Length: 208
Image 1: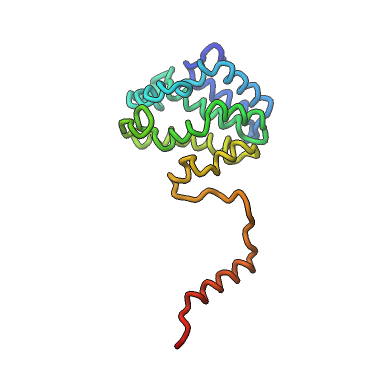
Image 2: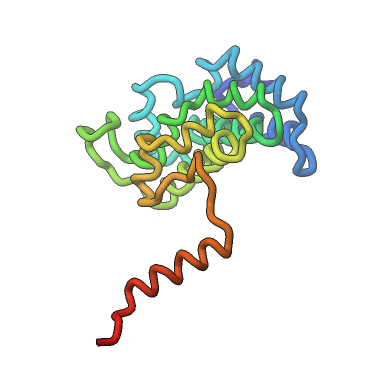
């Protein structure tokens, strides 16, 4: 079905998702088969993902009403989102081989571009901002957040996790949070209590 319909029917990707995740449990063999085919035909199947020029095409298609358009049987945006969700499905569970392929198809920086600059034409600081409808922006971002979670955060693979804790990965600056500690130990409860008591005593003025 994927070979025949290619980018015409996003529903076929949804059907593949039902075979990759069965009863909430990822099927490793089905993950491998789906990813093998996606990687082999990435230029045809992973539409709006592979080329920088496709970035603005995605924005145009959203403004033209292709996202969630029930009257269209060949929506490229819906197919694109179904592909992202399928990649997230393939990264679920403990399947290192699939996780490597998923992160190769959608690198960290590409996910950050979508989450931070989905409505910026030509990408980057010099691009022109054209705010997408809020519902459309949420739908696009939610698919990539799901992919980010399964492929880069909830993984035992070292390389994807290193992308998460990098100081220059744009994620922590955008969230105004600090990356998790990668070394050192956190003090015990007693140690923390003593430390807090000492700081409190230092702040308390001594009687004259």
